[in-house]
Length: 188
Length: 205
Image 1 (cartoon, each protein chain N blue to C red):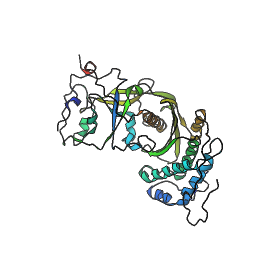
Image 2: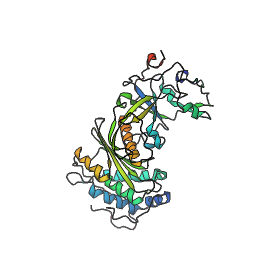
Image 3: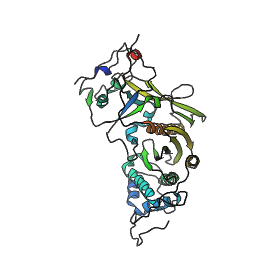
Image 4: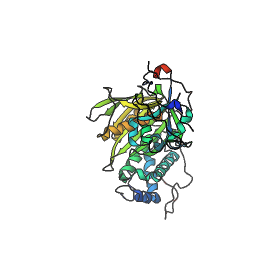
């Protein structure tokens, strides 16, 4: 995953974040990585939702540079992509993402009366992914609280949700401009 | 401007330990714009610092009126006014501009006590010894030198001891994430009807 990443950035700091944000190829690679693995039950990808979600991620990167010192870029992006794919495939009505003062990436989705709170923590010393904590609520009642690897906790989502059939969104224009590119459409 | 007398602790007051399940707590945020696009409280508005989740500061909405949320302690005595009262000392009354000011830029949200107190448990969190444990949320009366109606949301383990995750990052992570999830699940934006606490609950007999 994230094969198209242009550079294996070692760790984040304000300068590197600015570099990432200025790199349109980098944004595009992230978007392309996320799309094929966010398929609903019928294999359809909701492009708009993925686009909106990745845009939120970049806005958070911009707003909260000060919280991200020392986090390993590749670790952050790999886990962002995996976590996003796992929650988006259930076609949530609301999906949001936020960096927190607890050195974590907080992913929230809701669908009907179900709410999923997934928080990814990064080690303060190594900057690498440390663990994920998943909380699920239904009808305002706590159904599950569990921690572990990201692979382990996201498996639990299947017990509460089924990957959904989702509406096809056809992008009418290039979501991100590629410098020097002559093509305007992407095949996923 | 006078500091509201109703907020000051008095030596003939006692700790409130009665069931207040139908009552509400209020909590201020640094700004009025405290919700994100998903309708959740933004991280920086929910917690002022990382360790605050262990002793989450709120006020009981009743004798503590809605407008009191916009009083803001300031000055050199701020630490004294914010610290917990011991139920025996006479307290100093804060002076306007020297000790408190009005800050109308703050936001306010609410919790129903009955949805927090002993209603939330986190059963699969490992404690500092690597064993599974159960944490339970409690709402406790924690009056300060400037506010008798101050309450805290705290967390106890199976033995009834308050949780202290220092020294165990795994444990701390699980607790932070679960507390965040719960607070975000239970907060209210619309002002509930205030409920006065009966005098017999807080007056020494």
